[in-house]
Length: 165
Image (cartoon, rainbow, N blue to C red; front, side, top):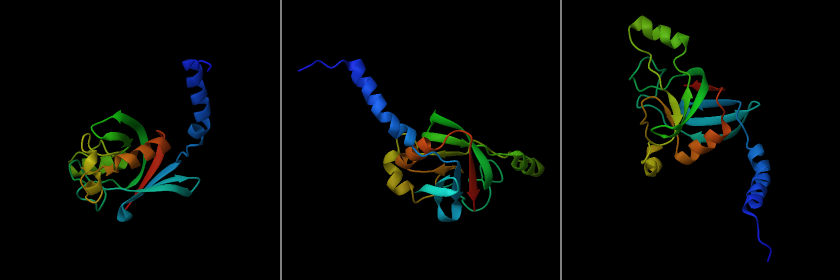
């Protein structure tokens, strides 16, 4: 039996995996419908995946200020990905925009920030069968870790996100 060179075996495995890696569908838009508690991955105007999500403890209405436990509504950008967060992977939403900041300033409050799409709190992924039915975040958009992994792979930094009531 011929001896297999480990470097050649690794190279062969990578080359054989390239078509699967290259064919992973990428979203050009993420759409969230709060009233349906769903996140949709969209490419060229057509959804190709959707996931159940939960929001802040006060899910109705647009985020007004820091600590109101609301999820913003409007068009933003998923501007960076964070693999080492307190939650299983997270993708930052570019809230607040200039209008959000101006409205908060007019009211004499901070707009808040650090709004993310994320998985479960680290170490608590086992709660996702229950947590997916309760709005438990401080205003973020949460998924199960498995669903967050799929979103993570389909979304690049710079992808727009529309969050609808």
